[in-house]
Image (cartoon, rainbow, N blue to C red; front, side):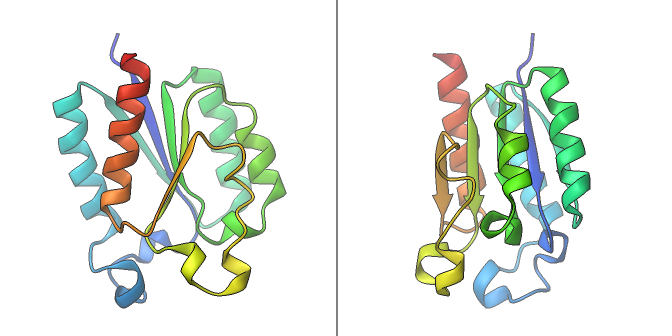
Length: 147
C-alpha cells in the first residue's frame, strides 16, 4: 500500500509569490506543490494537499486526516503557528510523524513569531529554508516510515 502524506498550509499561503516575495520567495503554493508531487513520485508516496485561511477548516481537515490513519503530515500553520492552541490540540490526535515547515526563519523575525504552538509536538521543524524545507520534510517522513 502506498503511504499517504498530507500537506496542510494555513492562512495567506495561497498568496505565495505575491505576498512579500523578499521574505517568502517568488514561488506560488501551486509551484511548491508541483515540486513536491515530483519528489513524491520518486519516493513512491501519495500526497494530499489542503490550504485554508480559516482556523476551523484546518481543524476539521485534521480531524478527517485522523480518521484516515495518515503516514505523515507536513504543516505550515502560517500565523496560526503563534496563536492557535486549537490547532495544536487537533494535531495531538495524530500518531504519525508531523513536520512543521516555515519558509522564513521564524527565529530571526519579530519576537512574536519566535514561539510556535506546534514545535513541541512536531517530530521536527524546518524553518528558513524556503520552498526546500517542504522537500526536506517529505524526505524525512519518507525515511522515517521506510524504517
